[in-house]
Structures are given as C-alpha cells and as structure tokens.
View 1 (cartoon, rainbow, N blue to C red):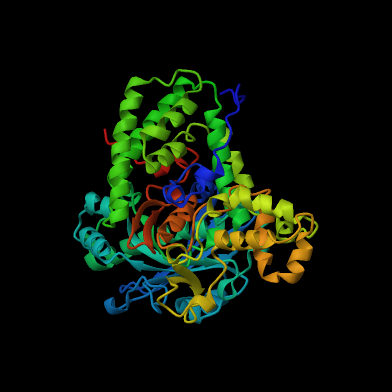
View 2: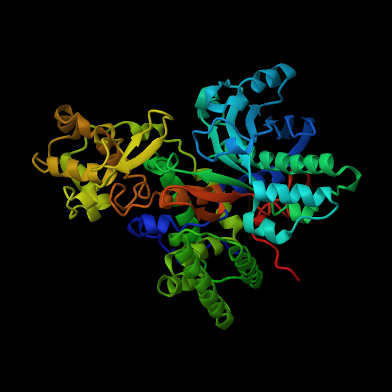
Length: 562
C-alpha cells in the first residue's frame, strides 16, 4: 500500500462533527480502546494465567486472573457472591452485587487478597490502596444466566439466538479508576507503554472479567449437572461479551476534559482524512472493506432497542445499509479517490448514523495508516490549564466567536435554552441533571454549560477595550476564569467543545454517553431513557487463551455463516 496521498483531504469541520446529534451516532473503529488493547496484547505475546479459582457450589468465592506483559503483570481479583434477587440492581446506589473486582498492579499475595476481600465487595463503602488500579462490580443478566447454566447442566449447548439477543451474562454498573476510593491515581501508570493510551486499565479489567464470567457460569453448570454437564462451545462463548449500564455520571466527562476529548475526535478525524486522501484502493483493500461491511450487517441485525429514539435511528441505519449495499453493487471503488467519493456521497444519501458507521468502516483496511494515531489520544498537555493573561480581550472574543458563534444568537434568558441544570448528588457524589425551574438546584449548578458561559463572558468583555488583557479582565471578573481557560484551550483543541446547548430543554445526555462509549469500542447501544444506556463490550473477542495476531482486531465483526 502506497501511504503517500496525491491530495490531502482536510479533516471535517468541528462545526459539523461536534454537534450532539452526530456525536450520539458515533461507532467503534480501529482506534477504539478495546481494540487497541487486544492488538497490543497479541503483538507483544502477553501470557495469561489463573492462579486462583476458589469458588464453591453456590458460586461464592474468589478467583485471580493474571495478565503477564513484557515488563509487568496485572491481576484481576474477582469475588463472586450469592446475591438474593431482590437485592440485584443496576443503580449506582446499590450496595450489593453478583460479583465485585479489583485490578491489582502486579501479582497479589494471600495477604493482599485477604485485604481486598474485606473491602472490594463493599465497593464504595470500602477502601483500596494504590496497589489497585481499578474497582468494579457486575450483576448477572438473570434470564440468560439461568438459560446457559441449565442448558450446560443438562448436557446441551445454550440457544445461540438468545445469546445474540442479549449479548452478555453479566453487566458492570461501574468500572472505577484514577484514584477512586483509594485506588492509584492515573499518574502512577501514565508513563507505562501498555496503559499510556486512554482507559487501557479499565479495558484490561473488563477483558479479564469476561473470562471470569465464562469460567463461573461453567463452574455453576458443572456443580448443577455433575457428570451430565458439558463444556460451553468456544464458538458460542465468544459471543458472550460484558454488558454495561451507564448513566448520567459519565455524561459530563467529555465536557470536563476538552483536551482529552479533542484528542480522541482529532485522531479519528485525522484517520478519516488520511483514508479519504488515498488516490486509489487496492483490490485486497476493497475486498476487505466489502467483507467487513457484510459482517457488520450481521452484527447490526442483532442490535435491539425499545427506546423510541434508538428505534428510529436503527430503522434509519438499516435503510442506510441497503442504500450502501446498492451503491457498492454498482461502484467497484476503482475510481480516483474512492473513499472520498464514498464519504461525499454518504453526506446526502445516508442518515447521520449511517454516515458515521461508514466513516469508521473505511478505516478498517488501513491499519498501517491509522493505528499509529492511537499514540496521540492521551492528554499530556498539563500546561494547557495555565491561563495566558497576556492575551488581549479582542483575541479572546475572536476565539469565542470561532467556537461558540452558533450560540451568539440564542436567547439565554428564554426558559427553553436554560431549562436544565447539572449538579452533584449529595448522596452519591455523582453528576445529575435536573429541571432548573421545577427543582431547587440552580445554586448547586456545575459549570457544564460552556456555551452559555462563553457567551456571558463574550458579552461582558464587549464592554471592555479590546486591547486590554485577559489578566485585567479576570482580576475584576474572576467568575469567568473557567471560560477563559477553555477558550484558550480551543486554539490547540478545535474538537474540544460540543457545538450544542448542554442545558437546553432538548438536550439528550445519551448522545454524550454514546460519544464516549464508542471510543471504548462499545456496540449495540440500548438507551433505557434519555439519561442512561446499556451496551456490550468484547462480544466476539477471543479469550486470553485464544488471542493471536490473526484474531486480535476484527473480532468486533461477526463471521457471516457459510
């Protein structure tokens, strides 16, 4: 493959990309964090072991799974519990779970396991140490769990159609890292190559959790069925991912981390632009694209949701697949700049959901061109938080016009434009969103309305001489410090700001959730309201003992049955 393009197609305009309706339509891609991890582990020949599996016939006990990298090891310490049905809840305020986990930095001693056994099952009520890198918990998908246990115990394989429909035996309700509840801060591991990219610690925890869940369901089937029980078919087991229930607690992340989120979006947009800039595609590249398109059609056919918004988007995506299929039947992708032609065509032929699906898919044949961008996705710009007080007010206002010009004409006094307010729950210290004019929450509002705040600062600065400095302005108006900091960040982070109103009556927090989760590599988004969503992770991925360079990447696309 000739990596040198004759023409350089520019990245898409942030004004287009950073609308919530588009961010809420993003799909996983080569740069997704799960796929980065599996590629790395296969390339570096990581080894895996299970030094401890002490679980009784009721499914209660402890297990340890260790991943051995080139320089370091990481161990998942898992605790299985016999949870009464009435205590099973996906809510973050639950206090008991079917399984709880910690990712240990290294290989734990028996003393470490004993210490963790007294704290990890308590989750937020317990405390861990800087030897732990993450803390998590999960509940069973009761109906599918019972089906798989009963089938295996009776000497039969579980119904594959039910597995396709649900996708997981357990779903996590939180995977905490970065200093939560005493765990190690991100800075402790940030310079390690294997976890330098974002969320690699959490993705490793989920990868090992999936293996534990498979082993646990097999253990329970063996205990129930005795000699009649059979082993779960590996080809069926592969389609058991790990579910996740994610709510409002995650939504503010992409607002609170503009540099980091810019880096994610920028990497993806650079990748898309690089592929669009290729003058031609080889026969093998086109064949791979067409194969993965067919495989993705099967995956999308398994995608289910009952939420009206997602039902509508799925209907549009299904129609888009038919439209794209017709296009591919009549276009050989042998013209000049085939990927740019395809993307340009999609802008009028497909829905936003279909456009972003296609944008991810065209990257697949070009790992050599795309995968290196993963090194740009972490946030190493601590200096970006330092406000440049020498900037003139005129320059600051120009930056606001560039990033938030769409918001200048909004009436920020109108109720519909400031209907919501973000605050932090006193009970769980988690972000929440409420109705500003119906609940007494305004005085507790968090700075999660960057557009409104930017326009307020812009308007006030309009009363100043443009040659005066930001330092002079902030000396008298310190309440605008957070806005001026973000404004200056936008110089190097064009994709750092959402180009929509995050407190308007029409805002859908699930768009923020999906934007972040797509970069994790999540699939089959299933909103349960406009404020929380269920997803599936690692469905189709090889298990540790199966992982090779040949299966470490395209596992996200199911094989089309012959």
